Image (tube, rainbow over all chains, first blue to last red; front, side, top):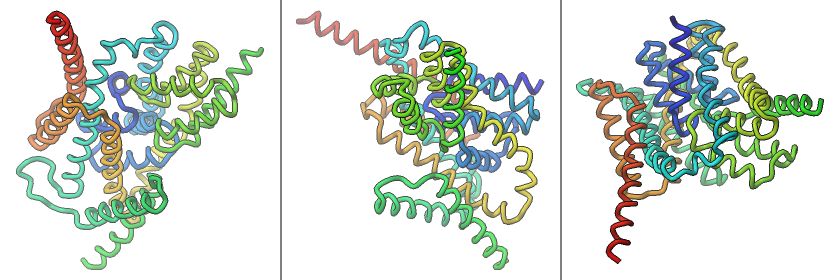
Length: 195
Length: 195
């Protein structure tokens, strides 16, 4: 039953993912891979779409994945799943125990969770870096570096560092996505010419 | 009557925020402050900052959490429902529409090339999101150890194709946070006992 599965999976993500949109990425990537809902490149495409469209990232992801797996009803149940835990927990906090997140035990628990979430994001980014740019998905894989991908990654690093230095603030992710898309098209046609 | 008007404007305000913020929860905070504090006067600046501080340590989407909380504070449970519906609706409509055409869109060669570049950029965005959070983290021995272990386990498990759910990382590190807290209490008691 795909609807129930979508609802429960997004319910779980809504309930145990800390650190907002990016904190959810490691969990979302694991979930979509284990169900065979998206390949890694499809997942990264979707993150780009979710980043460059307005609204909360997880709602964007839930709507898209839900729709791909189960049409409009799939979208609805996935989104509902992602929102439900927030609804229950935050209403409880707002209505009953205003100081719930201030309790020492809860604070201590969250104090352990916070560095873990940062570790999860960095770990996910590193494994993606290895597999997308170097072609290393698991140990024993022969490295198959994506030369243009690495070049684009390097150009994006240089561009955003320069932007930050000159303008004093971070460049918007949407601009970076547009630039890397243009570079992708440029290098794509170049490599087609070479071959 | 007055309440209906309030629900109506809550819904519209959050709809506007859902429609005009890109990049998820943290990007939303500045816009929310402008709408809720400066324009509407629904909250004072202090109340707003307090709410954000409380809510961003809870699990789930930050944007949804803030909507539920503020909706409840202003107009009870119906307020929560209207605010959440408002913040999610634009995402839902836009991503559902995109999901219908995305495969057709991806069948163009130029688009495929563009996404080859964009994937490198998305990895960069995830990595820098992690680094940004790392810079803000309180660097105690405890948090650095948790972070180090998480990153090391994630990368090596992924290379060895060993499945270990991210939920367990979160629960385990939260429990370690509690254990560390218990130890700090015992230590304090011991010192007081000696004096």
